[in-house]
Image 1 (spheres, rainbow, N blue to C red):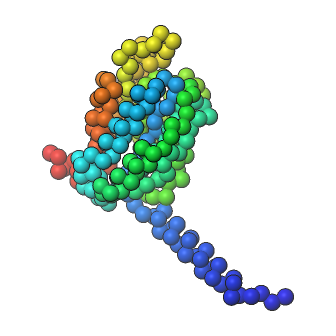
Image 2: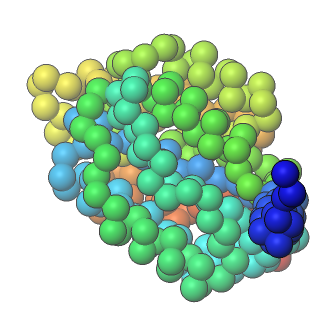
Image 3: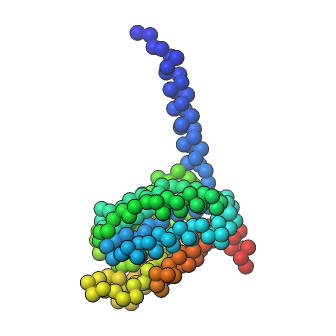
Length: 249
């Protein structure tokens, strides 16, 4: 039986082009691969949820952040936005997106504004970290530095030990940073969850963050979340950009 190559050849050409495009994108270098891992557990009420979303939007569009990104060796970073809650509750809200100017930052932040809330379950920081690691390993960009930014208002109370997830991520060369949301007046039913002995920031320092240059930033109240997020993101980009650090001296 004769094959009609009039139909086969165009298909093979299309397949070749798609493969070439995917390969080129995978080899495209950025200064930083950054996974935002955002707590949307049940202790994150509507007000906290909105303030987190608003804080991320404000930070990614901040001119200082854009300047820091553009000052990098490649002048661009790649980010994704994850929401997590219980052991089986993780969602990639926005897939990997390259940010290299104000317009690309705005498009990414528009996706954050438009996305519905994913969960309101228990708090599995460990599963959130594991899921973020998976996204970093499938990222279609290459970077020397890979990081996970975990924001949350409570301790790990679901899934495996958070230290085990942290240690496995660190073994892969991934840095984990934290942004802690302090609760001014914790409810009785979750007081120790949101305000553990020694404070939530100390809990994050001991159990969650790690890697070169890892840090924990604290939002003393919900109004300060946006500024803490801006400082945190600039700190992330600065660690990946020697040129930015030099310029700020």
